[in-house]
Amino acid sequence: MVSLDRNERLLADETRFRQISERIPAGRWGDPKDFAGPVVFLASSASQYVCGELLVVDGVS
Image (cartoon, rainbow, N blue to C red; front, side):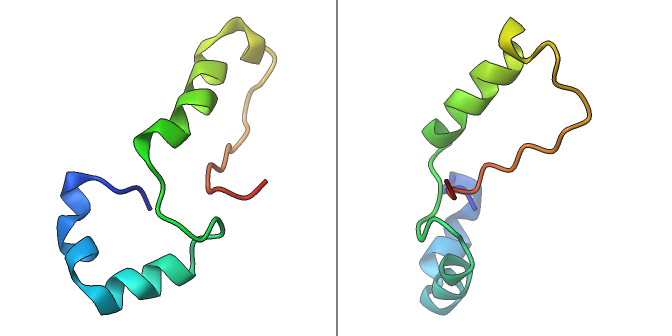
């Protein structure tokens, strides 16, 4: 999950927030900045030989 304005209701509901947070591998909600690296990679020529892959950005290294 990414912490965005559209998730405001989930962030305000402590029970639901905790339920979701426990399922996030990184142990925290993502920030839009967390996606910058993967997006730059996919938009660059460095990814020209990448096709048909599912890139999971979930905070697990």
